[in-house]
Image 1 (spheres, rainbow, N blue to C red):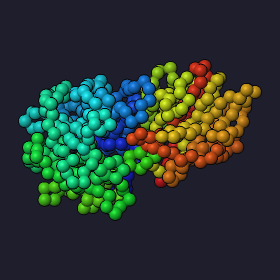
Image 2 (spheres, helix red, strand yellow; image 1 turned 180 degrees about the vertical axis):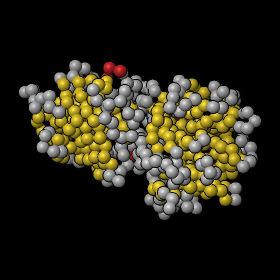
Image 3 (cartoon, rainbow, N blue to C red; image 1 turned 120 degrees about the horizontal axis):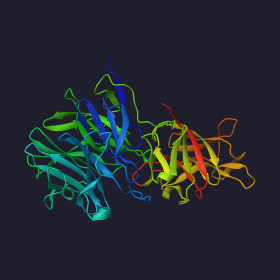
Image 4 (tube, rainbow, N blue to C red; image 1 turned 60 degrees about the horizontal axis):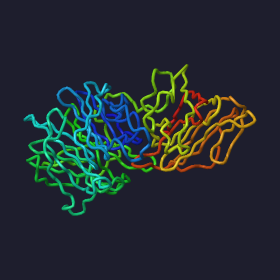
Length: 473
């Protein structure tokens, strides 16, 4: 019997995914906004079991800017190189490239400057011509619900014209927020796969034309129907070595972010049919049998030469913030905003979409405050800080327990259904709840994150031992 998969295949915030196949290998990238490093690169051999292999962007803004930065990338392989195009809505459209998806990647190159330019996707045609399609963000450009196509230099350095409006969805009944285009050529047609209707409630449309400049006809090919998969849209089409077709897309799950589903895709009467006749499937046979079970890393023993690839800072990090030494992560208690949502020096990773228990062991040396946080539109933490009498206090909200100064304390968070967080503290007699439960919330276009932090005047240091995430399956 063929092995089966269940959706979501990536049950955490892998927002706006795009996917390609090169030989027998599949690669995926996703939005990262202002996290550093950004543009994660994932690898799979079967479209179900994925691991993180690197990042394409290693620098970012110096401050936390919710909802800004790297939006909706497209991933392609052309002329022996991997290419990622992405929009920064406050700057313009960029591209990076690499021979090896693990890196190194080139520095971001600005292909088209301008406000509100988002969701770009290139196409290198068979005749050597190159094109670039993108959407618009009303918040910056004043317009949206339309797609613009440019001729592009084959080296992807610049666009060659002012652009052509190829889809004006204001003219299509019921359409709103058309965005996230992916451009393909197949069976004599040019295809634009594009979502519409908004993040939480939208659908997936496709547009086809014999000419890349249109006119395009449209069809809705995936929508929620009677399922519990709200807003099944925005992603990428990919085929397998055996010639089967699949579509990967996101579902917005609030505090968990945009989780990724995998839909079978077939062709009927010249149009793609996704899922079960246009509605999402809960799972099915694994596209490529024989793969090994895998998932993006979550736990970290801090024994490697670098941080695990699951980690990102909330903004551009300073090397003085951290070091790995003797199997521990040492965070300097650096100055910064008291509000963890605004603090660059918070080391974060995605909140798992399944119930989980997170633990880490920390010793606070000197002045400061350090701990484990859950950060979204709201934030909460469990942390250790010194007391005036030389002892230390472990605090979550208004609840606290006292421990001897310099004592190693295990801090934790139990995340139950609905992203309800109960913080834990183990001061030597086993883990016990501390404080009132906290409902994690989504951030600006992102899910909540787990975070480690250390704050103070720069003289103290927090020593974190193994970070463990146990996910209930």
